[in-house]
Image 1 (cartoon, rainbow, N blue to C red):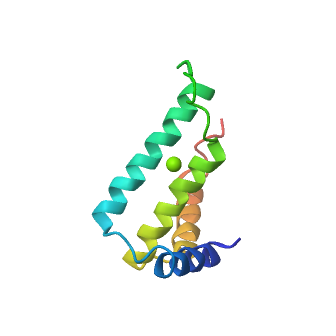
Image 2: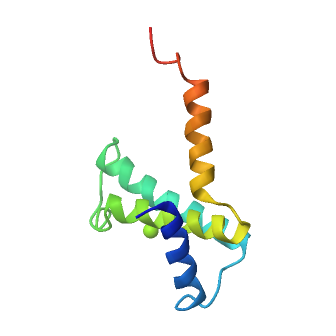
Length: 103
Ligand SMILES: [Mg+2]
């Protein structure tokens, strides 16, 4: 799925099933919450934290998708074209890090 399509799909869902966007501050809090859920899995699956029963019930892919969902919500309600923004991000990193990882 293209980023443009993902933004359209999320917007359609929010406008119909979701009943409208939460405000940006609420979505920022929700993004933080989702990043925390992702961190919990990473710490237990790849880090040194020991998983308790139920800690790994939700998968890494699910939590990454949750983070992406809220990120897309914020982009949509703030008028950000993620395709353009991501292209610029790759360009910025390419120029900035052209020789960074080469000895
Ligand atoms: Mg989640």
